[in-house]
Image 1: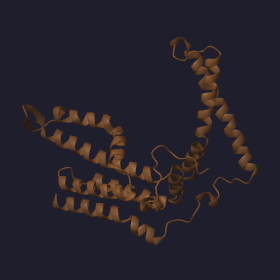
Image 2 (image 1 turned 90 degrees about the vertical axis):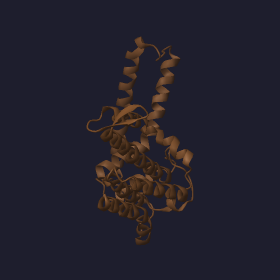
Image 3 (image 1 turned 90 degrees about the horizontal axis):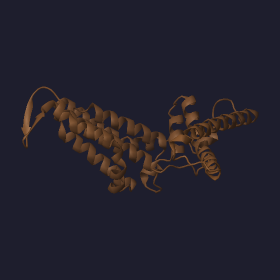
Image 4 (image 1 turned 60 degrees about the vertical axis):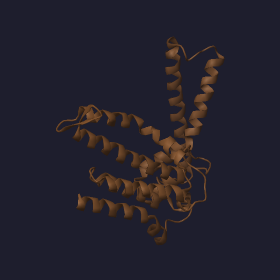
Length: 256
């Protein structure tokens, strides 16, 4: 895998968050998310504390709020569903600005918006500070099943190749008078998809046989992981945010 295989969400920087090993950032994100999910929805102040932690990490990683909020729009369909809950819920009802709203629905809507937004933001921070390759390396160091990490590795490595192949096939079709915008040419499009699948399958077979001939035994060599795993100090530094989030969640559960 070449170092040039990045992704659109990654933001190049020399911040302390970028320099942390990928495995510690993955664990920190998972623990933070679990703490957020475990927090009772009625404890509003806890979510304010989580938001402050996310803002602090974003500032430390030099990721601006405009970038985060614009990418967080991916959760908009879920937010639209949350807006409908106060009108569809059961139980006690209250009147707000002339509208009869369900109390349970209001809590449910708040629960989706708060926890969903925090989860999306922390995931975006992980993506913005960690390349795709490093994410896979981090999962491998965390003993994620080899089948999953290697499938992701090869998908990342050859995705650009397949996209280029599809682009060349499309140009060849158009140069021969085909226009994929018309519905009656759907058959030609389907045939192109089938041909692309066969080419990808044959290419995968050739690559796999070439790897076997070079000593591949089902596991990527250790040199692929680059530098060594995280040190104890790096684990302790990365544990700051999830530890604070866990403390907030525990306090929220106890105080109710």
